[in-house]
Structures are given as C-alpha cells and as structure tokens.
Amino acid sequence: GAVVSQHPSRVICKSGTSVKIECRSLDFQATTMFWYRQFPKQSLMLMATSNEGSKATYEQGVEKDKFLINHASLTLSTLTVTSAHPEDSSFYICSAPSGETQYFGPGTRLLVL
Amino acid sequence: EDQVTQSPEALRLQEGESSSLNCSYTVSGLRGLFWYRQDPGKGPEFLFTLYSAGEEKEKERLKATLTKKESFLHITAPKPEDSATYLCAVQGSYNFNKFYFGSGTKLNVKP
Image (cartoon, rainbow over all chains, first blue to last red; front, side):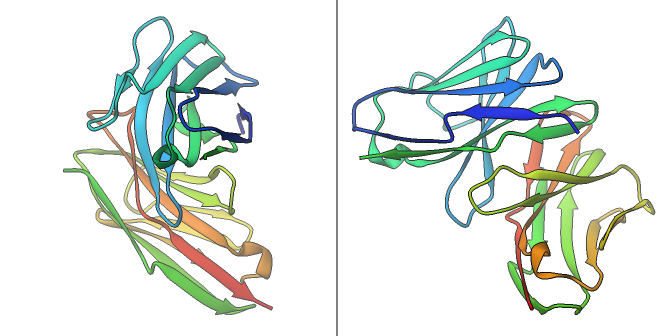
C-alpha cells in the first residue's frame, strides 16, 4: 500500500510556542491531505482538509488561525499549531488518498507544558 | 447525518476464540466502508475496503462482510498479535473526501 510519513513523531514544547508537523506522501502524489486529532481512547476527529495550491478547508469548531495548514507541494502538507497551550496536547495524524483508500501517517504526539 | 457506531467498545478473547466486531452505519449514499487496525501510539493501518452489500474480503484470520446497514469484522482463531483497536469508517457519495470514523473496538487476545 501507499506510504505516508510524519515528522516529528513526538514533540514537547512550552506553552505559547508554535509547533510545525510535516506530512509526506512518499511514493505517490496527493493533491489533498487530511489532518486528524485523536484524544486518548477516542476515535479520529477530522480537523481540516489540506488542498495543494489553495486554502485548507476547516471543520466546524476548528480554529483556522490556531491550526495553520500549508500544502506546499503534491507530497507535503504541514500543520502548524500556533501559540500552543496544554489543551492542544494530543495525537495528530495525517492521511492522504491513494486510489479509493486513505492511507495514514504514523502520527505525531504533541505535549504542551 | 452520516454516522458510524462500533460495538463492542472492548472485547477480550482467549487465543483461538473466534468472534465478530460490528460496525453500524448511516450514510447518504455509501461510496465505501473501510476497516483499519490501530496499534497504540501509531496511525491506522489499512485492512479492507467494501463497496456494496454482500461483498466479503479476507486477509489471514480476518474477514470483513457488508450489508446495507452494517459491516462485520470476523476474527477466526485470533492470536495475541491481533490485539489492537479496530476502526471502521464510511465514505459517502456526496463528500467522498470525508471519512466518518467509528469510535473503534479495542481487542485484547490473551495467550
């Protein structure tokens, strides 16, 4: 199957700082990528759809100024958590479609102190 | 509103004890139903896609089936390495980029 990578896998930061997470499709191109958030023992919550060459589409309740998304190329999307606070601590996962299927990255664990 | 419900929330099995996981869904025009496996601290790993009622797919000890209202993931003679959370997701025809996920079934297989 298709491979999606994320970097970093784990990040710890101080409250008020910004954190950038990268999502790459390694062996295929993706004009669209998706960013999810997952709280402990809960399922994936779609945050936004990243579109190459245009603005991201955010789900209801997700602050676009806090979670900045840039789809720089056909293989790279970045999620920047700006002015992070402890409540932003979570597991962030990206995905990209290949054919009819979504393939997921390994996730990034963010801890804001 | 598109919705996915998985049951049970958690399932404990003895090694070799077969069982089934359920995924009930409501969607405006099903484009596809997907099963994923997720290990702790990792992203979901793709298992199966089902497109129409009556369709079945198999992979090793896993078999997925689909009806018009639900899907089952049958696990035959499970092994401890099958322990994981199994997620179900549906894709509708009207917004085919969006996946609706269930809350998952956490499977624990004891040796």
